[in-house]
Image (cartoon, rainbow, N blue to C red; front, side, top):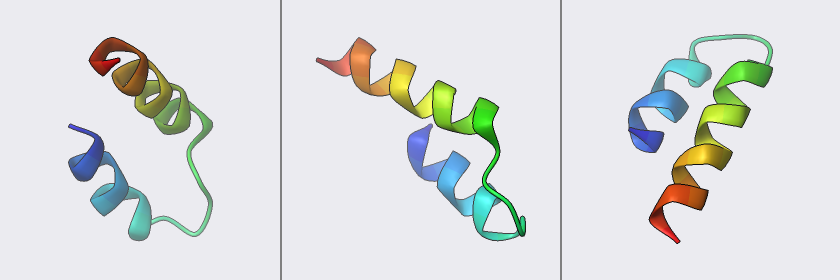
Length: 31
């Protein structure tokens, strides 16, 4: 999912704070 989030973020001029939180949660879940 993280890869998909980054791909979507590339189209946005600003980094989505919610997306960053989701990425952090994903990393936490993996570890």
